[in-house]
Each structure stands twice: as C-alpha cells, then as structure tokens.
Image 1: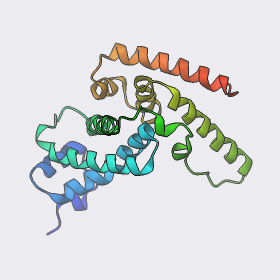
Image 2: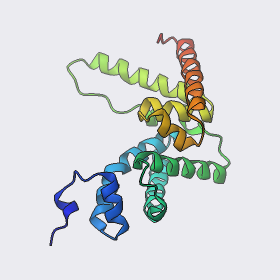
Image 3: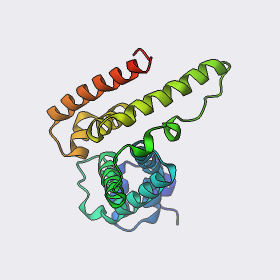
Length: 194
C-alpha cells in the first residue's frame, strides 16, 4: 500500500511532522529532502568548509528528527532547523577552539559555480563579486554574519531570525542595519561600490 506522503509531495511541513512523529518513514524522507539542502548551505555559509558543513548538516538533520516530540507546530520548520544548525556549528567551533569565520577568509567554498550563459565575461565578474562578498562577510563578527546570512541569503523573516537567534525583533533589525552598513563599507574598501 502506498502512503499519502509518497503520492503527495505537496503535503505541508506540519502534516509531514505529524506523519513522521507517528512513525511514517516516507514523511521523514520527504522532510529531509525538502530541508537538507538549506541546512547544508547555512552550515557552509557559517563554516566555509564543505566537509565540516556536510557533517554539521547531517548531525543537524539527525537531531531534527530525534526532537520531533518537542517541535512547536506553530513554528515553521526552517527556523527550527536553522537553530539546530547554528547550535551544531557553535559546538564545532567550541570543540576545535576555532574563531568563527576562520574557514571563510578566501571565500572559495562559497563563491558558487559559474553560470552557463552566452556572456562568460559577465559570469566571471559575478564569480569575482561573490568571492569579494564572502571575503567581506567572513570579516564580520559572528553576530553580524549570522544576521546577514539568515536575512539576505536565506530570506528569513525578522520574526524567524528572532526565533533562531533568541533575540527580540528590534535587536534583529538594528543588528541587520549595522551588519549591512559594515558589509557595504568593507566592499567599498575593496573597490566594489554597492
């Protein structure tokens, strides 16, 4: 017998959480497919190292599924998962006694792939700009880098960011403003006018 999840990949996250909580493995699989990439990307943006990011994302997904009992159905899954990823990253930094951002300095891991297009020169310029942006992001403090990544790269709402970082929305807004201002200044120092 085929389950409803296997037939309907459009189930909401809340429905999938309920189904996964009741032991439906295909619901867990659907949730994992839906959210593992964003968990990996966030870990990569925070760590700058693909192998570490893969380990953190994998650990975060495992923790995600082992904590289904405590999931607040009023929350969205992504901010909840991002909180887990953030905690896993911090645990890794503590274990290694590594300063946040050490792995991001060259920006290579985060620059992305060149886009195939009819204009290779424009693609190269975009690639160089991405590298410059990530170099500048890497120089920000941990709190400013987190705010920039969550809002500008993952498009989380102020409320979701406040939930992930466990700070008031007003603090999110002021930190974001300060982080963007500092990032703009660093990019301008590097010859990029934003």
